[in-house]
Image 1 (cartoon, rainbow, N blue to C red):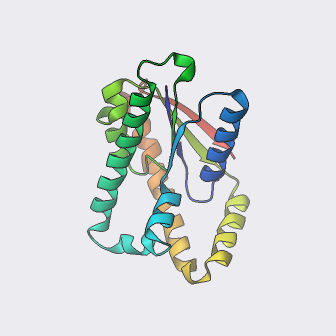
Image 2 (cartoon, rainbow, N blue to C red):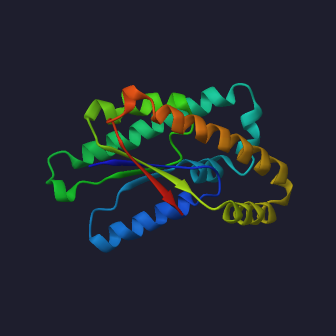
Length: 185
C-alpha cells in the first residue's frame, strides 16, 4: 500500500492525471485505489459557490478540519481493507489536492494516518506550460462566466501556496519521509 498525493496550481491537470492513474491501475489488473479528489468533492457536495465562502473568516478552519479528517479516514479505510491480504491485493490511495499549504505538509508527513501506519508516500507535483494553463483557465471562465474574478483570484493564491508547499517539502527534517516527482502534464 502507498499513498500518492497529486499537487499543483489550478489548471495543471491534477484531476485528469488522477484519471490517467486509474486507467493505469485498470490496465495493470491492480486493485482500484481509493481516490479522494478534494476540489471535485467540494464543488459537487457544497455547490459551485463553495469557493466563494472561503472569504468567510471561519472557512479556513472548517475546511482544514474537514480535509484532515477525510484524508485520514480514506487512508485508514484503505489500511483496514488491506489488513490480512497479500501485498498484490493491497489498495493504494490517491489524493488530489493535498497538501495545499505548509501546515498540511507537516500534518500529512508527521501526524496523519500515513505516519501512524508507516505507509509509503509519493508526492507528485504537476506542472504545465503557461500557455496551457491560460487556455484551461479561459475554458473554466467560459463555463462559469460569473466566476471569472474568483477564478483569477484563486489562481494567484494557488501559485503562492504551491511555492510555500514546495519550500516546506524541501526542509531537512522531512527529507526521506516521502518520494517526490515533478511531472509536466
